Image 1 (tube, helix red, strand yellow):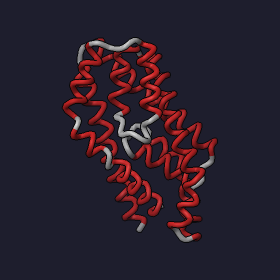
Image 2: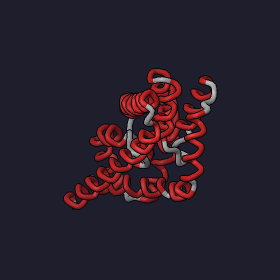
Image 3: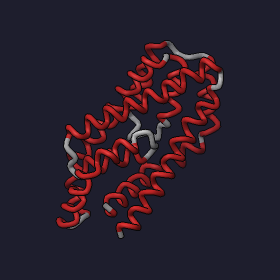
Image 4: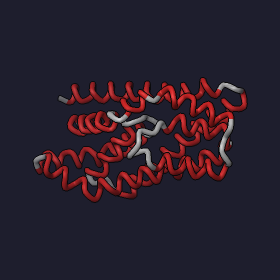
Length: 216
């Protein structure tokens, strides 16, 4: 378990490096979100953009929480949740497929056979709860999917877990955005959609580190 936890954290750190670039653009992004809210694009275009942006989340440092929240204020709960679910599923499935195809070969080069067997056994025991717990968390969500692919998690386990987790995340942020737009506190909702997942990421990473220390 300790090795699995450390791998999740290492992959998360690597995925988080692009966020340094995004932080430099925080001002322009804030103005862009406000302009989007004041003059939203057509619903069809917005749905397509939402799906595409979330599907590319594994490649781009996309803040999925704020994006879904903002869309929820324009499209409503049902359409936003459905569109966001499709985008999140496409991104997760694509990332998993890539690492499931080439990840095991990379893992064999980086770990001894005995250690790799132990990692696979641990992943198969804990992959479901790791995938579910990290779904709303930036970076850790992507890191967990990539690691599960590299350690041969079964497609059936991956698909149903992502389906449930992504549905919960998409619906929660869609509701947040819809309520925020209705009561005119969208700016606060956008901040919450960033701060709460980041805080959750810190808590989970802290607990994982402690579990790794205890296991050691």
